[in-house]
Image 1: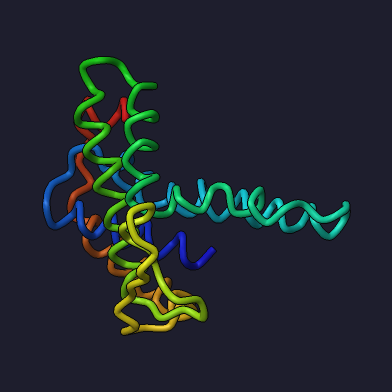
Image 2: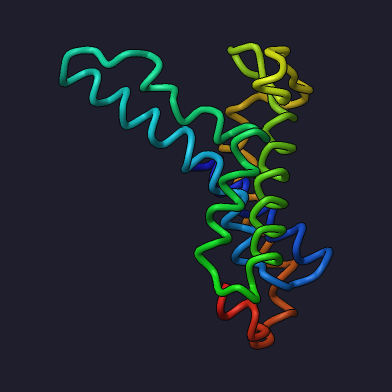
Length: 165
């Protein structure tokens, strides 16, 4: 949970610094890689405890949605759910949020070999290893406070494009 909070906060801080258009769509983009890839794997792993073992391929079927190869088609498919006039901006904000998510994740060090950024072309793993993956628990409260400070003076009504995002 703390990881989703940190991703959302980093996205909100990014939008506070760069502009407010489609803030919710951008923040959703930062949450989607974990929701699309990690949540199904966790749910299927839980099912594995109650039922006969599922094949590993099924449990990890959604893992590419946490990589650029899966983020691009996911952002495109989700943007098609929006009105035609909003699709391009929605796609850009979803994909931008997803890539910001990946950038934050790349700062971490993991027990596994890292992220295969060029999947399916290469299985070479990459990560910067600057922080531990559990550091989000300590960072979350600080980031929430920073978001409040960054957005408090901006309590203006959202633009029409934000309302529909």
